[in-house]
Amino acid sequence: MKFPARTTLCLAMLLGVFAPLAAPTPKPCRCAQPGADIPVDLHRPVAPTNPGHAWPGGEEWLFPVARWGNGQALLGTFRVGTAILGRDGVHEEPSARILRAIDDAVLVDVRDLDFGSRGGLDFTFAVALNNSLDVDLRYFGVDRFRAAAAAYDADGVRFEGFGLAISAPAQQIDYDSTLHSFEVGIRPRVIQAVPIVLGFRTVQVHEGFQLATGQGLPGPNLTTRTNNFLYGFQLGAAPTLWGAGKPLRLEGMIKAGIYGNRARQSTFWAPLDATVTENRDRPSFVGQLGLSVAWKLHRFFTVRGGYELMWMHGLALAPEQSVAVDLAEPQAGIFTSGSALYQGAVATVEFVF
Image (cartoon, rainbow, N blue to C red; front, side, top):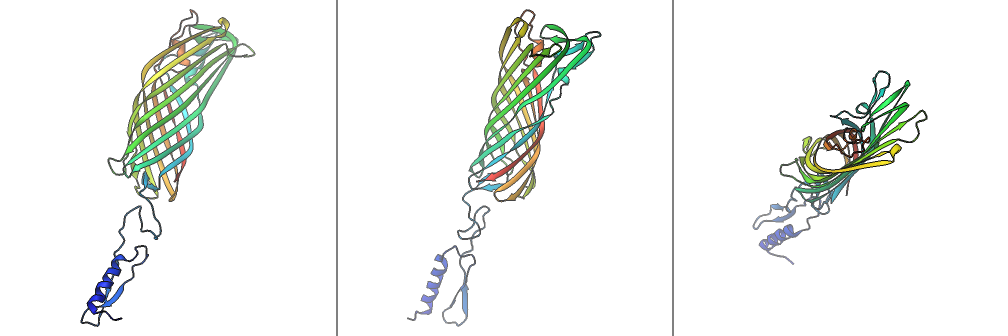
């Protein structure tokens, strides 16, 4: 059946508009204008370009994405790796020490003990509520930093601290510390590529101090344990410093907050079979800095490596209880003005889901 040229033109236009959009390459439709033998090309509409989306049937199709840094995900991201941290104590008060009995020379000072570095778990789970707001949870911790030192002298050694002066041929000090940090927060993107960090955080620092005396160094004669439970809110930012939107980029992080610290100490003195305890609530400060390099190996896989530093003040550190506890009385007390610095390398792999 033959249609007039004007009808043919209208049908061609309708077919061009309502044709399936999934075709990867637009194909022209050829027809003749009325009164002319020269064909005219009518093209389908061009698919819009929108980062993170593509037409169904194209190379990829993503729902509205969850963004982490400048990456893209269907729902969110999961990071898992390790934090290899060193722990330094900043002791502002005289602490427990071992002296040589004959001339009072300092053989061991707890302030000089070196914990070295130790690794622990580090994981982060993040979900985006929309293109400008993320929710994330992070945990990292290191179990049992440990340092020990022993002193021996033919003329004897003497331990001073906790209101005591204990003499023996040999003495040994053991000091351990454990860190746990858990935070949950939101990251609104007030400025592009610079998410603000707002959220709740809890940090726990648990420490132990032991003194063993005697030639054979049997079980500890003196034991002190401290527990710090910090709860509060933090504020910060996590900007992309270089390479936003590229496979290789440099990211920064800064966070700080004032926390309430529920601090507790318990000291046991074996010769008297006596235990003294004390609790105190006080404000504490936690600040954290970080710098990392992220390399996106695949759309769903990124590796990260960097350096982080965390400073804490307002802690009850185990050996510093020697200035607050008097076992000669005995009299309880607690010293909560200690500081601790954690720093080291962090390495993680990130999976997009």
